[in-house]
Image (cartoon, rainbow, N blue to C red; front, side):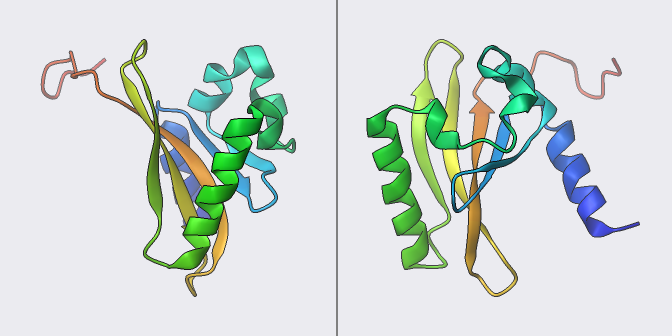
Length: 124
């Protein structure tokens, strides 16, 4: 089996929204969590469209600044961008790099702070 199949499966199984973009800000992939999260904005139909269309002018400016920071160093790979108090989650922008360390895109990652409510090893 091809390794990319495993990577896609990892992203798809993550319940947190993950939106992957190229350097032109085109949304190239949304996991099911992201498609559900952004259903009112178009959900999975946003794939192929610009992420910039979903953001204010100020947010667009910050995204450009973050990309410039990612470009400065291979060590610049993740930045905290937002805390959503209502959903108790942190949002990050993460650099995507090729095997040579070149920046090839980025993704938005949501991480909820809520404590797990299931018991250890509880099935279903």
